[in-house]
Image (cartoon, rainbow, N blue to C red; front, side, top):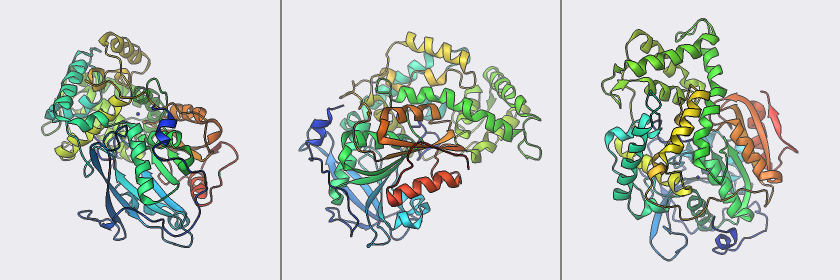
Length: 499
């Protein structure tokens, strides 16, 4: 997960036997051949702007509550670009988005077209908007405008380390979601996302699916592989979440501590390069203390910032900008420019924000999924202790990764325990992971690799940024993943790709 979604820069078990009883597992290998018979009605997509004209759209009805399959139904919006060679076609490749709160509806004609020809020849590329996310049946908590600020959605403590405001925000957001979120918000969860995907698989007429899951999508993909192991063909998990079943999203949030420490030196080297128009210091060693001094000064003396949310540049806004900017090197100038402005006592133009209805929807999906996946502590004292330790050990993130999100006051108990990821099942999983990733750090990916045991092989890429496959120009990593998707051949063991 990253907790940042793909739709917004603003912005984790029922026993397996019970689940597979819904649709008995099939162990026969998926075979190449023409498209399977689909129960879906595919039509030209409406309102998709620059989408590939080959992209088609459909809607599938699935149970709101998979424990009550004949009860209330919700809609899932789907998209596809068919395989480009009927004679080579193998099946369907699900493009599982990040989030929670991300959509892959545009991905078959977007990032899916970056896939090499031999992969596009073999697979129908399948995108979707997960449950709760428009244009699928959607949820909205009706939050106050101020609570949509990134510094509220990420629980940055007050400058003195107090979390009183964070606990108050958790109560306010949770109350709004209970009041406005409807019945669907209680049924948002990673396990239900995985069950929805199996309903899509069945509607497509496929015995097995392949998948490319990114960020939070890796957790959806691995949960699917755990619940429906014999329905998986070739599974690629890219930028991987820690699968800790006792913490789930709490572990993902905590991972930002190490993720920032892994990536900040790379930013510091860039931000001190001679000739860089956004250079902030003469040496890399000066960048970190400069950032900490600027954040502390903005804690004491915020600068008015009309049009922003909040309407001031304070220390936590700078810290949140740092976190966002470390997602990929292409965003480094945003942080450097803000540091230069803060040093001179000015601000740049207020950053553009997504439309508020999109933010409301994405935020509700994120809160509902994270809070329904696992119970979070309710004690403010527990968060205060964790935040104090985090601030001392990781000053760049100032305690945020150990702080209270809305889940600390969530009005509903999880309806089921998190899925425990194990090594039981077919060896069909390939992990690909950048060495320096602020959102899903290598340390968390290694925990997923360990949990999967013989089921997985991991490709570690010498690259910086969130998202690895086809994102960083690492020929070794891209070639290894593409070869697996096209042929099913994985490396014999874990691989390190230097370039």
